[in-house]
Image 1 (tube, rainbow, N blue to C red):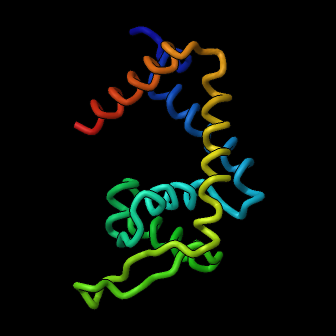
Image 2: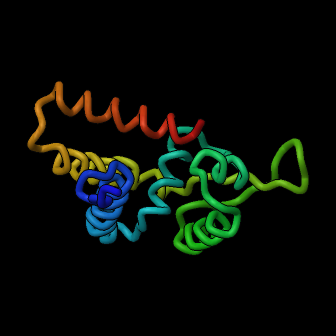
Length: 143
């Protein structure tokens, strides 16, 4: 049986890359009072405000408890507010505060900077191929 080489394992390399990206992003957005999990929620809410907790859980593929804790911290930190859902009195929708809206440009600029750093040694064609291949791997694992 051939030894398992983690330096040639797509899963290990992707996991290592994800951890390094999260660490780099965390360092860059921490001065804004944001954590990576909050940033991911904000990305969805900047695209479409008024989502429910369930919507965010599905879009970000996280567990209910994780999402509930993240939203609780975001509310505490003045990033979101919850409002009654127009069609369902039991459901609350999540809305951005002015503070969260003001962070969109700076926070996304930091994420772009981390991505640029990660792909700095690649040509535009290599970067495009790299992203396409990663997206295909994610799609294959979702099937």
